[in-house]
Length: 253
Image (cartoon, rainbow, N blue to C red; front, top):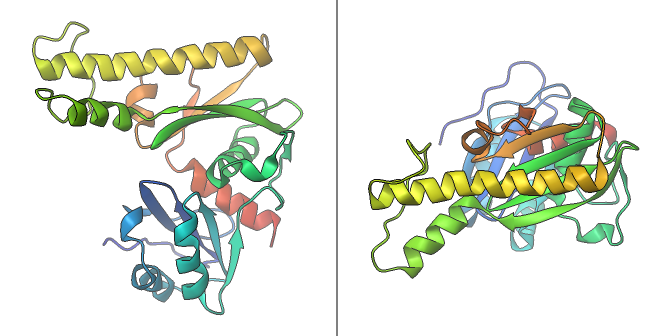
């Protein structure tokens, strides 16, 4: 496992636990190190202990959407304080949502990050196990979002539920009309997924932001592949969720 490198003071160990992967990064108050990613089902006390042994940190800062892994973090952290991201902590944005406690911690981290780093109004498109769209209003409030199946989930479903379709390695298709089974699947996956993202963004804009400047920031595993041909997306930030944890930690220190 490659070790993250950060020179200078280390204030935080950032931990983002999603359904597929857990990401770890050391951070100062101003920047994060290169993250390390492991499969969430491999996250154990021994794995977490190795990260804690790398550097002395003031606080462990966690976003988790996998509750069964939370005890692992709490128990292993020992005397190192743990700050959990949820709707009750300071985020730098307000929450205008009927049941704030039901919002995923990663989505709140993205909202905090996009507001601090890009400004408002804004939409974050996070290409993870699911693709999520999270909206921060011009008044700097988190107001809701959209959840759709993730790109990998869709392609894996085809592979698992059909007799003849292969497992895909996702990349940019050469053309819309596939000249092989894989070519046809790549076209449907990538071009079709861009269509899904474009339609959802268009409806959000028409409903909430019919005029004026709007920041649309993509993050997550397939952000660069899908966003490459989408002019609606104004920026790609690979580790936006971890940046949100750093920003939240600063606000709550």
